[in-house]
Image 1 (cartoon, rainbow, N blue to C red):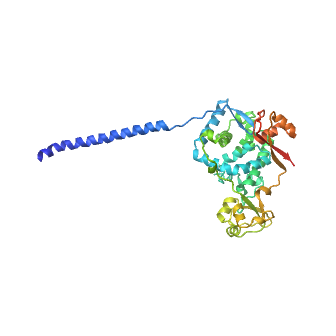
Image 2 (image 1 turned 90 degrees about the horizontal axis):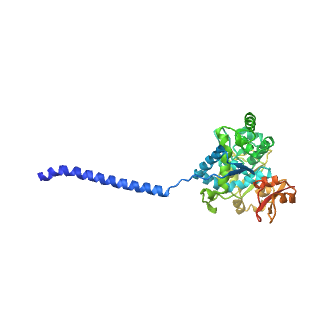
Image 3 (image 1 turned 90 degrees about the vertical axis):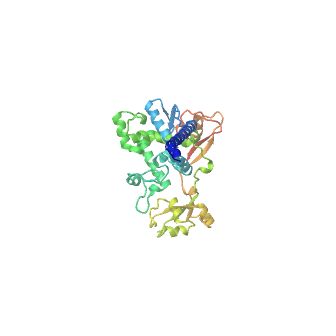
Length: 380
């Protein structure tokens, strides 16, 4: 027994050392295996830069190193911020058709719908400076362009009205700058700010201006978002049709009387307060004093129809969104025939090639593919 204890005091440390060595060896093996698997399966890709990009029908060369690198930064930032970009793509399916229609009605190139994505991600967010809504209007600016903004009603959160207000600003800016890229930049730093920089630097192009970091990135962020939205699979975003957020069919309910409690009112209109607020974020209080004013409150069409309100939709109390507007023109599709060009189509309809390019976001001189659709706007 004593002999065993004598040898045991030397044997036990040896066993412990061997055990630790074995564990260490296994750990090293697993670590190497893990690293090998990581190196085998994990990939981060740089994206090949195109020779040019486009915005509002204008081709932008990426030959200048700084222009190419500014675009590269924004495309990489948005491609590899996967969760945010996926959510933007899903929301875009719901809201961009509404925005694009209003832009087209007001003569604004449809690429400007991506400005709203760049500004807010199509969320009713509030910036540290107090800018609000999809279009991020400041209180003072929103009022200048006709939005009602007070404690009860804030139309910066009203998608259609805020988009129309943005169109007023964009058209005003274009009248002064005569260049859509500069107009987009002015939305970020202000019209007078852009004009001052153009004078001071003695250039005429946004792409030749030396600007603060935010405005220097601004248009390239818009273009990067546009490219991803128009070609999501090209950048690795795989979204099935069922994953996109669907448009919500609504009915506008005419209100020209005070509502003491919107929660109770919504229940009498086959809805509830939660849905009412989600569809009408411009309503800022749980009541609405509509004396001597007319508002249209959006409510879910399916619920109203199911509750038997359908017979009233053609009357003045309930009106469908699609029939509520009274545009001064209509938009139709022209199917391109073999041999037709921008010039021949423009001559056929008595319009300019520039108008066709603006309405369809295509570059001058583009060869048209037979069978493709071209949007034509007819004044009434």
